[in-house]
Image (cartoon, rainbow over all chains, first blue to last red; front, side, top):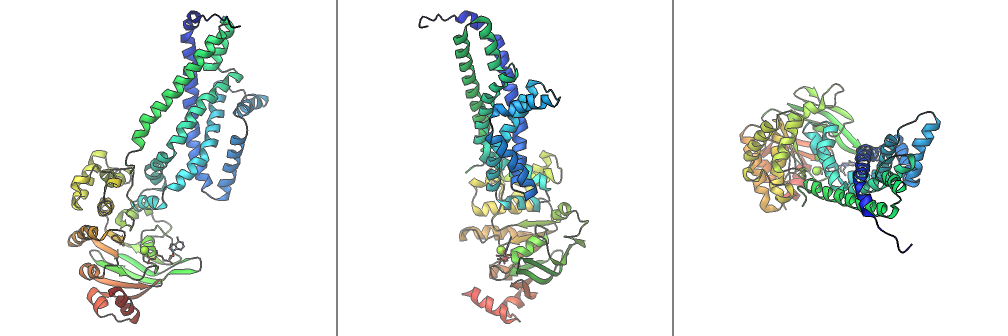
Length: 221
Length: 241
Ligand SMILES: Nc1ncnc2c1ncn2[C@@H]1O[C@H](COP(=O)(O)OP(=O)(O)O)[C@@H](O)[C@H]1O
Ligand SMILES: [Mg+2]
């Protein structure tokens, strides 16, 4: 065991395939954020609303936050499958991880929403803006500034969570790694390389986030 | 004309507005004075429909503010309001603060909206500050951004709610200067103020407000120098100290 021979050449030859998996990982991550963030905003608005809006939103959040993400993937993949609704694993990963994102971000967004003074809305409405325009142009940008960092953390979480897609047959980075190592038996090399790729992806996301965040921070005291 | 007829409003058991009737004609300046908590802010918020009323009616150029068929977003464009706490949008520059509603509400192209916004900033003496964020501006400058922002919609009436109360004394003058300029240009205004000297100077009429009721309305010099109601006299006596 200790005289394990590293064979990187064979592994590097498969790098394009591995990167293909990384692309799928990024696609699932991006789409799950596109699903999750607007839904979290909606949930946050519901949490600030009356009981008939607040209760279902709260129930949804409780379920998504207190059950394993893998279970949520299974629910959509095998659960809906049992009902005869067979969704592709890519779709299931996007939806399940997207809903998971929403559940985890909703309370953060609620407090961000609360932190924007009601007077800001009043000022916007007094200029003749509709409720939606006031929300979109005045409240949301201020909310985004507060909720930005937690959102970035959630994006990284979503990226790491997407590896669970392997277990429903998704060929993302982990899935491809699994396949390649079983074909070549260069298990350790592949796992080390993939770990490095995940690390680079996470760091790249954080870097992109920091650049984007500078724009959001405009006007901050 | 802004026309209030027997307007009443309550918060729970508290009668905040109690049978208020008042007209503000085009081009007229009416100053509203009265103790804190008497309902002056509430009155202004009702005039532009930010608050509902429980009785009576408020009409602007004949259109009921709280009427069922009223397009309140359109009606509000006739009514600029400036608040005590400037409420500038912190994520936008001074220019963007003024241009936003022009783009979103009046649907002006960005270039035109920004040109119009620049003119309004110049009007309130903020030509050099267009690209500054509110966090970099003094209270007086922020308040003038808020005035420019309201003026940009080309309202027929301006409502001012103690716009100098949150300011350091040395910044009050620059804001009052903007109001004087508006008066000279014939803007109709309803001004809530604690500055009696300013009310006398700028007001065509002064209305004294107490406990949700309009106690006395009349020409500025009459109400301030020779009040007919004992309550007005008492308030002015206390305010003079
Ligand atoms: N949203 C509200 N809910 C309950 N009471 C309120 C609200 N806004 C104002 N009030 C009360 O109504 C009264 C009048 O307030 P306001 O119009 O702000 O007076 P003013 O501007 O003359 O100081 C005060 O007693 C105040 O506490
Ligand atoms: Mg007030």
